[in-house]
Length: 555
Ligand code: SPV
Ligand code: MG
Image (cartoon, rainbow, N blue to C red; front, side, top):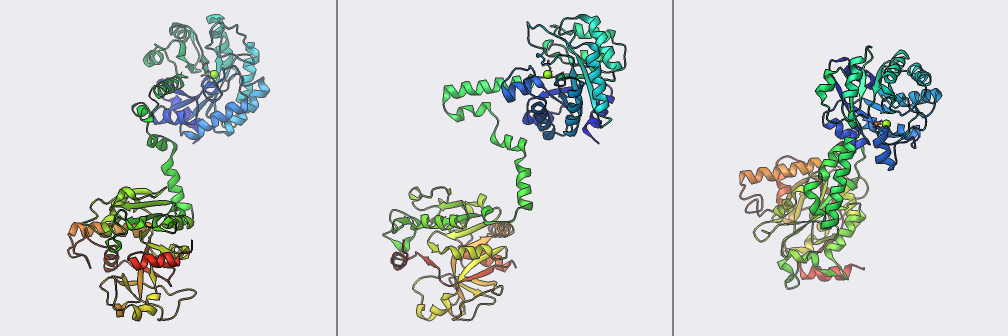
């Protein structure tokens, strides 16, 4: 059903139909949201709002059409377009009808002003009207030009506006109805509705009547309806309300010079997002854009006190330690950004005021003394929606390691260093706790995996994994898909609700490490993919590590 047919349908019902004037696409959308059935694309408000110009035919047909087309596209409602005097003679009217119909406009209104016209509302103007014959010819031309039989052609007479009297108004209305106009707009500048109501009493044709009560604003909907008017156009009040709103906003801003002073007077950003369809846009992105890393976030867990590095960590957490002029955290953020991850969150705890993380969102786990990494991760729960990367704040890794993790298939992916297998004998007995990993299909010891690797799944992870069974070391880097993130949230919520104690290697869920959550995911039957790396990372957990970092990092 064309919008013209929708409009015809509306007009065929008994009673008066209101049309509200829009000056742009957003105002049209607000008119629709407020429940009005028809939009008037007004030359007065479009000239004022879009060009700050008087309504005197300064805008061309194509400019006016562009405005009407934007308005029309923004709403599902039929639009009645103010086409002034058709921008010339009957020849111009034909092109106007063709172009407006192509843009999906339901109705076109042509007034019998000469070109260039002057807005009907301006006081103290000498007015000239076309001859009845010439305007009737334009209406016949418009009716013949329309392709959609439902398109509504409104013929407007300015006889009363020009002060030419009721008889001339009636003569013109009759002639235009005879020329085939679907509706007659009888404009009036009288201060009351008396003139228009008198016209309605004298009107003896079936052609329905349109009015614009701008200058006789106290007339009620019911009075017009009772008089048999079919369409009332509330033409410019939305713009005038908007101007008042803008002036008040500006006056408040000039006075307060602080944006929050405006809060009670302006709509929220969210409201604008709603009107312009930001959610729909996101939905399209989610559904159709290739999944790059740019939609992924990173969450760095930096809440712990780093006791193993005292006294270096007396006044700052480990991530704030300096290595050759840059902090560990700065280096991490650099690697993340180099891999296209720009949405970064850092969870602080110990000496949180010293954490400097430019461009990252900060979350706090103030209970860092009594809780574990998992609680810190969930301090940033809003970030755990959609794809995200997890990392400890005390590991530095090469970009290639992160890229490999991001490329790997699977909803939950962790990086496992296989160099462990070569070094195992040298490292035993372990001088410090290590997150050891048992996987389903580890590469053979001493062989660095090349090319396509078999899919290797996590079987067991933690610091209590017997070293002789371990096939690698977890490096503190993991990636979750949107589904993986959901599984993690569910697993955590479930463990919390069950009050699981112990929770894998931890005494309780509150004290759990990230690896306990991974073990819980495996236990619940969710596959965790292990991506092999061979060194390419270092951890800063002990003073030895810190010294090694200084030695190994070149710049
Ligand atoms: C308009 O809104 O542009 C109109 C109505 O044509 S009036 O301003 O009253 O002429
Ligand atoms: Mg107009």
